[in-house]
Length: 205
Ligand code: GSF
Image (cartoon, rainbow, N blue to C red; front, side):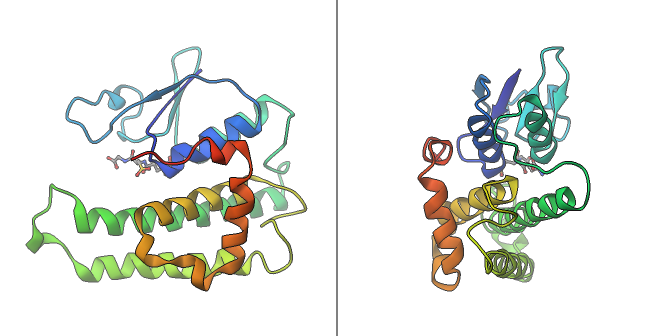
């Protein structure tokens, strides 16, 4: 098994955190998917990371599929409940956290992607995406009103996905200053950063 990714991608970080929490060993190979020389298309036709290449050569993507698979590999620290309503709830938290990232990344690319000229950039599109970020963050904060974890009484995939999103927003969108409006999310990230799985996977520019 081999994980292909980058040191800044929050989706890749989610997979690396899950590997660490599950105490699974997996070589990590970095790949710059934005470089003209990238070979990521050989494993993932969508040209995206993370991508997990299995022993037989076949590839798994995207991050939600990879983490679901990894959770089955070891009974250590189950992160996703068994099939049923609770599992759907946890995966909805993951979809929300990933969706906030998707929107924030679209906004960032709209503002910065070198393939687009200044005249081609759309402030209205950026605003639309940032509206999704704000709404998603409010829902995540709301999800912590009854306790320290988004689902149940211990760390799970919902918290890991949210933590990767929060840390990435701080890394790439410091001007959002989300901690001011979302104190519970701030506490969640502080708690997560105490864990080696998060402390050892900080984004590196
Ligand atoms: C998103 C992966 C993604 O956008 C997942 O794995 O959960 N839904 C997917 N990865 C980015 C890197 S990053 O922004 O984290 C990527 O590989 N982008 C390259 C491209 O061409 O869009």
